[in-house]
Length: 163
Length: 32
Image 1 (tube, each protein chain N blue to C red):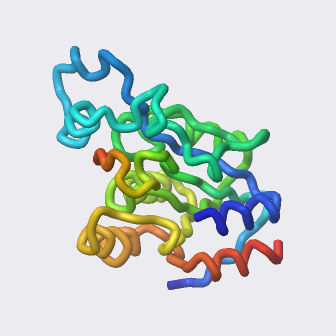
Image 2 (cartoon, rainbow over the protein chains, first blue to last red):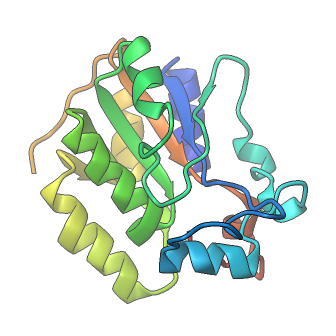
């Protein structure tokens, strides 16, 4: 992931961040409906705001000029956020996607991006999952229906380094 | 799968959830 990020910065591509909601005390407590994935985030205090776990890993921290979209509450980085607006306002049509987790946020974001009309490249070795089965389902079964290309880190670096 | 060519002005890298909770071994692996 870091290699791709560095290559994108070197190529002067825009860098956008789609970040999951960071748990804060009181979250979900008054919701009438809550999805299993949100129940899990609640019980585990996933990405708890103000804690080390809820910080972006240091090498990946946004830099000046990067766009950090509003946090998403489910899996797609687009649902109930300003990600689509921000991309469109910056004239972006093609997305190179990487991050975590392959079968949840990454897959959901790829699917939603395509629904919205973006052309998506998935970097298959710049993601991860809890199991081989989940990784396989995301990268080999589901995402190929949506991404225009599924490439390796080296392949995408080669492609963008010549821009 | 078709080879994609990129237009610098139209292309962005989208980074999803690079949180410590996900990336460090032994961190909170809460599903998200």
